[in-house]
Length: 262
Image 1: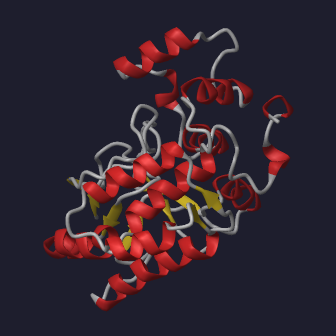
Image 2: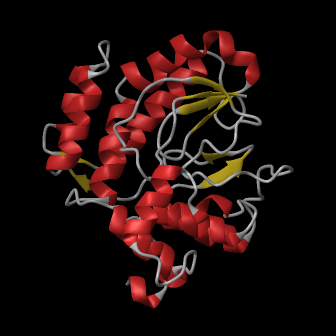
């Protein structure tokens, strides 16, 4: 597999759409978090009840595969999003940084200041159809990163750049997705850092007396204790939820959320 673009980390905003060519297998975790993958980790079964419930927490079904957090279901968004100032800024930045973007399409979707679930699903369908036109099948030849970007199998590396530009970026899908996820998960555009830390505490991933200052230092130094969360354990899904959706804005099943977080 080869990986195109890096999904969000705690210190990286959703606006990052820089395309990188990196090997997926053996590259360490390049998914939503910075935890190191298990040496023998592969796709986990989607029939596991605990896993299905946890998948609802981000409103996007996903798996940790070969060191990366990957979307595994498509056209399944259910939330409507109103674009606040922060999401609108991210959208503008994405459009500006994509010279060949289908701006007319993006503008048609966002003209009312919203991206509905139906509109987001339609945008994702456009992307999937585009890849299909190049003989690429979702979850077989490529995967969408949990928070952006594209991962492909090794047989498609020679065409990765042109195809991903056409089907992910130029057609407006990635720009809309970045803005949509930000609008749903962080409607007020707040600094999510303190909320992430509180979420980690709520899920008992860090000590209760772990200060925000120390948390920031550990994140900056790359020595965060969160790096040791094992992707093979249920705690990893809690970790990813805290990283991507610490306000639990996309949570459709709240049974697993600690009462202190509600």
